[in-house]
Length: 111
Length: 118
Image 1 (cartoon, chains in turn yellow, purple):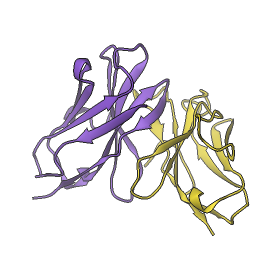
Image 2 (tube, one colour):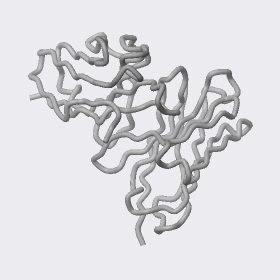
Image 3 (cartoon, rainbow over the protein chains, first blue to last red):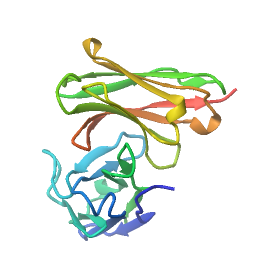
């Protein structure tokens, strides 16, 4: 069982927007602005998409955005494209462990 | 450009010890704040943190696997080594190493699939 809770799957049509949630506690997501999001295509390594809740690394499309409210962080993808179909994982610093914690992952299907 | 690559056996027998090497370039593990982490992913399952080593040799381990893991670094060779003892079929997974800084896994290796089977 993962420390952070994500929906198992979400879906959307091309051009639409979707949001993936990542729920933790005040010891991780709610207590620190150290939430990251990673995209993983099948058979590939994860790729950093969002860090520190809402920052995008260089080269990541501005269709990807992040936010946080209380103990829940969110990843929003606007203008869905077929290439966005992948698994998405959130991660957070936590004060209750010596290592960061991941969410269980969310499979995004572009219909 | 930062690159990382994992190397090691693709097949190990139950009870054996697994040794994986992460060879990286484009950053230095002697720079303050920098770390290299190991993460694994069983087939069809989620990512799981295993261990992390910092530039100052501070080491962190997954609480559930701590007794089986050892992480070391060779700064001169730009390598980080992870050993996991007493391997079991449930340890079958793709093992990744990653460049870590400020609670962020900035860059990942391609991963290496390790199968545990007799």
